[in-house]
Image (cartoon, rainbow, N blue to C red; front, side):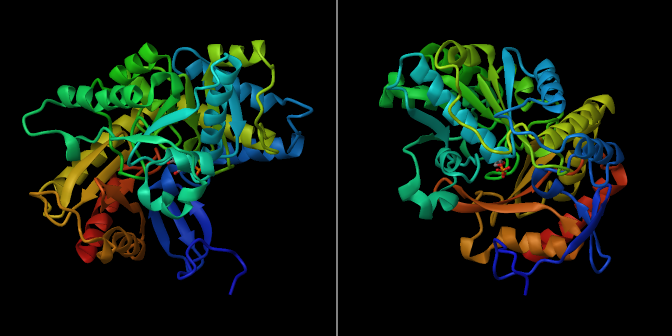
Length: 439
Ligand code: PLP
């Protein structure tokens, strides 16, 4: 028995020994199609020669230099490239080791910004139910996933959670998508007025919701209205693009498709593509300037922030996404995947919704398609799908989440951007087998 502290102590997963393109290989030689890139991580697939070479080069030049003493060439180059492609107004990049760290830094920066601006009463965060922002305590407090939060409740911050924008569940019969988007965004203003806008520092949201709901895109106009409300009450908009960013939805930043820019943004997963652990918190010039003009010191940091090897990796990944024209490919292959999913599951009695953007797609699994009632949680439907898919040689990301107070199931798909048409067919075929076996 290994001494690795696995999250699940009742399972002993196979040992992975290799990766090639869209496949992972275990020690028995079995190949698994990586239909979710792990958890939306492996956007370039496995064994990418250019990224591997960039990491190796950096390791032999300068593996690590602490940011308390030095900056480094790859960190500067990555920050410059990210800013040159980021939404308007974004000007500074804070490199960390993953998504939770990026979100934690975002929350701390928002708070410090208000303290430095002389508004220390602004300490409240508003976020959404059915969201996930990471597992560290600040990020976990911000997320609205009841199951993940439950046992840690005494350790969590007091965060307001409003309804998410979730057309499948919340759009009323006969209501247009636009009208629903405006109604969903209004929840933010209602909550601001309830708690007192002068006490609120930021609103936090994933542009396309990932792990908690399965690739739920916003209704048209929702984020424009959210941006207006944030501006009207002077609160910061923090977008969590840890899962949906870095090209996953077909644009480098998912919020580009909403026509808005955040004040602070977090990215991770696809930035390192699994070759190094890396995340980034990006912020506007104005926020950075407030710190620069005030204390001059962002009171937050980690030993491995700005890690040169991780930064060299992020730079190589970003250059690959942009230089190999992968964004239009994500759009094309995303449409192919969507069509194949609709073809296979469009009339399926237990698939209530098929949704997503680019190569970020989700299926909502229900007991009854007509009234959208989820399966009884005791069945563990999402876990069954995961197990059946894995046996069939498919890695997908089924999860149970809390939907309007009840547990529900979905499957998240986020394959590498290099996935071929044949591999999309293989993915959908194996997923169909798994769903049949599990429901
Ligand atoms: N934010 C979102 C939207 C995520 O999906 C995740 C991870 O799934 C995180 C934050 C946390 O990232 P990490 O697991 O890298 O800490």
